Picture 1: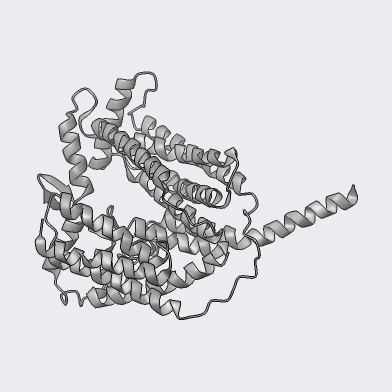
Picture 2 (picture 1 turned 90 degrees about the vertical axis):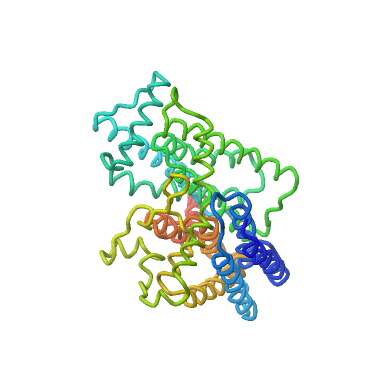
Length: 429
């Protein structure tokens, strides 16, 4: 452990506590951001395979302070009350969740068909043969001999939108067993994760669904509380996910019969905790003023730049690989893209703006606006994925949020249309 970095780390809980007192809730943007990084900076500090340089921890403390500064400025601005008196579930929500689930299964079918036509059929009767096929597919993906079909990549939007709609339902419905059926929307993501052995195929939908749930709960006036029972449930779910990822790694790297559990555990450790050490090492070498050659958003908004053919986004976003105990690693957190795009002072100024806009959005969502709840979910999602990369480099996720916010904006008109139709039918009868 780097003791200077550990000393700087103590600034994070202090900023989180001040932000909590200022915002009135741990779900206020500045408090949520700082509390998240208290956990995700503490873990690699004590359990990371490489040391965390003080420069990276200092930038992280400055980033939390910048978000808090922006939020504090926004708290001084009055926000008009939303005229909506009651927060109600948008119409057709269940049908849209079902449609996203069906499209998710279509994605699974397209992937399986592409694997079969490439000469690596996926058997469904033999478990061992299935594991070996998954292993060969992972090798083919890493070697560039197999690529996910374009249709599957586009329709993957449904596997992101579905969990967000499900989170919206769970945040607004307080009772009824039918709301738990919305979890079925995650089943296609689970199947894709098993077939492609890509953990992000499940973790991203989970992060998006959790973000939507938090934002919808806030809009509905029912902020989630983490009591002992819920903490135990979260721990059990995390345990199941870790166990499932362990089995998937066994199939991906070694095959089932020849797999060595200790090697898989080491691989999972090396792929989970180095992110802050890698970023801080890069920042310590990069320096404060070496980045005056600005890239003006080509990393922070990589998906848009790629779509407009301005700058090609490579897989994983960063091409530089860091070798850790013989394993290559290229996750530098979302902060590297900000620094490369705008330099350190520019990145902090950008985070001040983020904090300002997020706080305004939070205040409007808290007043009962579902439209602003959709925007608030975007902030929560970006925070939850910031230890990996900027979540909005993925155009499919950008499209999913556009569809979600468009749906929430149209929901009042859809409800009025339903009421009008019901009134006409009642009159006719």
